[in-house]
Length: 361
Ligand SMILES: [Zn+2]
Ligand SMILES: [Zn+2]
Image (cartoon, rainbow, N blue to C red; front, side, top):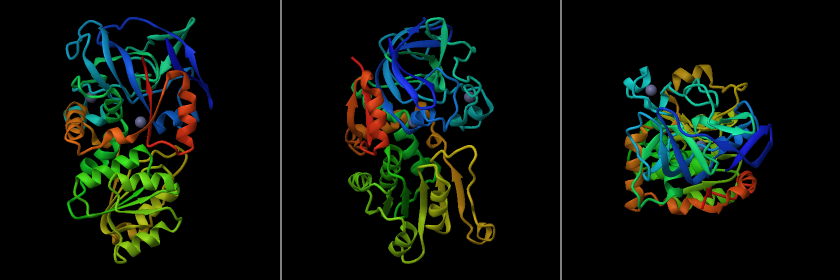
């Protein structure tokens, strides 16, 4: 089968690899759609270190082809969305209603949960991102990384719900808990940032200010519910002007750049909430003024996977889609064959797509 394999920093290509049957607790998926997400690029460019060779792709949906022993949640023919955090139901976090922090997969390091690979290139085992490796024609994944979806949901939509949409909408609704009538600023308007905008809109925010240096992305944000767009570097001043000098109730940083976290902080009113969704570099730190930390009485939140409980939240988001309250079809700017996956990353880096999606036959 074909897969997008990363062999080193910025060294990636579509290659032919082999796969083996699912073992106990695992499922073979025929992939139908894979979203092209910034976290894939972070592995390609080395921001998130992963041992090569590795297949990226963590935002996907497909059809169950076969199941290993002891798989009870899905059967062949089921339509499924992938979750890039497996939910074991047994660890400390799962038992404390924080399934998005499930520790089951954290030691997998590119392998399956038993420490071995199902994908190979000749005699070489090939690693996969987040137990999935979804940018491939087939994936062998843990059954606890799957959520069954209804058959009338387009695969591309289900794929996006598995990462970008869950993270962004979840950041607004579940992490920050945006309240009706509030003011919001979103720094960074890629696929996840646009989903934060949509989450803030669903939560009833009255003012949603989208900030991005790309006019194209700000225009998209305005289509998805932002009330104001800012492309200048003086975003903090402009946000203050738009909020009567006070600052917004909620700010979101969705890029992973320390200076932007500071800008989000400076744009937030006393007592407001700053939520960081973007993943920065391991070597970088964020500055918060030591005196103002206390005096401004703000809440600082880190958002991981939009505080997702995939088994509950994926179906909820997909119902909002069916009710036309989440216009996810409009998020899909362009689709690609697996052979064109490298072009999809070029387009993402050029800021051309709300979301690019790989579609398989
Ligand atoms: Zn992602
Ligand atoms: Zn768990």
